Image 1 (cartoon, rainbow, N blue to C red):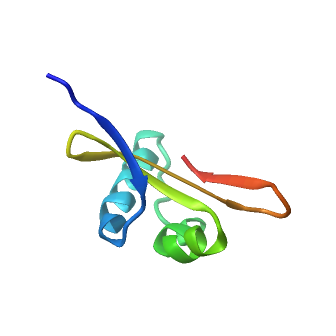
Image 2 (image 1 turned 45 degrees about the vertical axis):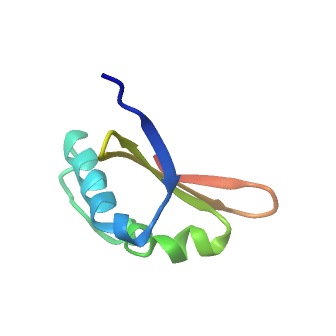
Length: 84
């Protein structure tokens, strides 16, 4: 059986699953403070990444979202990897 890993640009329909993946990663790493102001970019992905000239990507394995990542411009030709 072949399962393809597919990556696409974030869509608004991905929002809740992106948050779920993020929270699962926090829990797996033992981060117990939960969500806070440091997650504000994830509550506004289009404004925090896409509208600024960055990208936010979602990856699936089969039918399930298993990866997220975002980067955005800092200044000039520099980018910041914000989520991975």
